[in-house]
Every structure is written in C-alpha cells, then in structure tokens.
Length: 459
Image 1 (cartoon, rainbow, N blue to C red):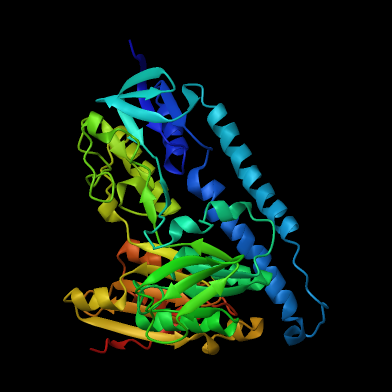
Image 2: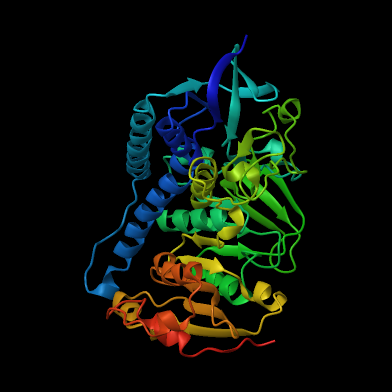
C-alpha cells in the first residue's frame, strides 16, 4: 500500500520550498522530494553562484581601471581558487538557510531521491511508494547539449560543471550568444582568459531589438571579447590539447580554437525521467508540461511550477508560480500566469533591464506606439561614475498612455527598470512617472526626461 500524504512536492527549486511553507501553514502533511540539492538551479548553479562570480570579475575590472579614477592598484592578479571559495561560501549560506527553513516545517518531510510516477498522483522514490490527492512538480531544467558534430569527442563545460572550475582557462570558446553565454564571456574575460563567443544566429540575443543587441556586442568587444555570429554550421574536434570549433560564418576565419569550450545554447525541462505518461500528464514536443493559467496540468490534482512548465525560465517567474497556486488553492484569489508582465535582466556590466514588449512586438500589436531613447552619456550620475555605456529606451501606447515596454541598458539598469515595471502593473499613464520628482543625482531621475521626448515609433 502506498504511503499517504495530503500533498507531494517534487523538486526543491525556487517554488517547491515556498509552496511547502504554505502547505505546512495549512496543516497538510506534505512530502518534499529532491534528488540533488535544495535550492535547484538558482541556488546551486545559476543566479547566486554566477552573480557572485560576476561581482568578483567586476572588482578585478574596476581595479584595473584605477588610473581613470586617480589611483594605481598595481598589477591585478586573480586567484581563481579564492574566487571559487568565495562563491562556494555564498552558495553554502543560501543552502544552509534553505535547509533550516524546510527543516522547521513541522508538517513537511524531506525525502532524498528520484521520484517517478507509477500512476495517477502516485510516485515511487527508491523503493517507497507515495500517494497524495495533490501533486506539485517543481523539477526545473538542465543544460541542453546540442547535437553538434564532434560534441561527444571533446570535453566541454555546461553552466553547471563550470561552477567547479578553480583555474583560469587560457582561451574559453563559448557556444551560444545569449544570456548565460554572455555573462560567462565577460566574467572570464575580466578574470583574464581570452574569450570567443560563437552564435548561430546573425546577431547576439536574437530576441532583443537590433540596437540593444548591437550595443551589447560593442560593450563586450571593447573588453577584448571576440564575437563570431552567423555560425550556421559548427563542428568540434581536438587538436592536441586544444579544441577546435569549425565554423561556417559569413566572415572571419573558418575555425575558433581554444583551450576549453562552454556550451550555453539553451535548457531542457527535467521531465524525461518523471513518468509523465503513467500519470496522464501531457507535455509538449520539448518536454515542457502543459499547464493552464493557474499552473494546473492536464491530469487531475497535478500542478507544474517553474522552468518545467515552459511559462517562464526565471527564478522570479517560478516564485510567482507558487504564489499563483497558493492564491487559487487557499486564498480564493484567482491569480493567473497571464497577469504577469515579462521582465528579466542580462547581468553583464552594464546590465540590461527589460520589461514588457520590445519594438518588434509593439509593431505587431496594432497599437499606435510612441518611443523615446536616451544615451547614458546624458546621465550625470553615469558620467560621474565613469559608466556611460548603453542607453535607455521606452515604448508607450499613444492612446491609453500606458507604458508598453522598456529596455534600460546601462548603470544599474537591472534595478531602474522596476520604476517603469511597477507603473505598468498599476496600469497608470506614463505621465505618472514623467511628473514624479526623482532624487538628484541618480540614473532614475532621467526617466521623466526620457518620457518627455516620446515620438511616434519609426516604421
């Protein structure tokens, strides 16, 4: 006979433990099953460790720029073992805090092992069989290993395995010119590696506006990163102790050669070994679990949260998924996935903060769109800080006067974008921000000025 629980939560990523806390408050006997480590990608391989490494890389970069600020720091030597130790310490703090939180939930039992459905709302874990009326899936994702010729013949890193590196690659070739790849590119260049980025598409960050992608490319190339785009055909091979990436690009040499390779071409959901068919849970061709607007899967009594539902690939969307589920189940509050506005950041330096539509989406919307753009060279705080790369851009519905989207590429752009995002959620006209009195001297004080220069979006 299966062990009976009120709820089963599979996966302890961003949504799982938070949902368990709510289930615990409701007095529901809950099994939390995790096969690897508490915290999922964000805590162990993603946001927390990478942003810790980004901070170390930035510190080294600023120190090298000392002459610009009137001081000399001498030769900057990066100790990669110390960098990794710092990263590991920050991660451990998060892991320990999460373990203490889960351990304090009196109605929640943590079970270590791999869960697989054996039937509707029934799972097996290392010889145990568990059943509950409610099952919540927070199984996350993993790095996609592309089917590139030669990929099985060479050593390579993914975003997970590179977390264990405590040495400096002499020349890191990164396959993939999107968010993960570009963050690692700048980070390792600042640590002291030669870096080459290879992207299959015609530009970096294919989903971003052309001017955003072009400026990001310029930022990276100014730091000495080589970027190869239009690499439609790639192949990997070994050349002694080197790795060669064969390319078919419209320009440049036919190969990129380095000491190490990082694959950063996307992610897949961890649903391939979950036994979805046995539970009657539908997924799409890529393995993402199909859910409705309240995170409900096709099978009765099953919800899917986080990366595995294909409705958001970020820590903040995973957290919001748990809020949506809890609100619908316990608060009589019909929150929905479709209520949220797309928002994310690229954590290079300077960062890109994005909210809402880009220009292509705005043009397709059929709305009359107003746009404004301002270079960071006009921002006094940016000039004072010596950080004038990038620009700010906003899009507005000319009829409703509501903000449609924003791209803030520049000093603190990942934070500043929230001043616009909050007004978008409030559905207030852009004049709410334009007429606000902001603190001087800040970067955000130029947002009202930016909104004062709106003009019809060029065709």
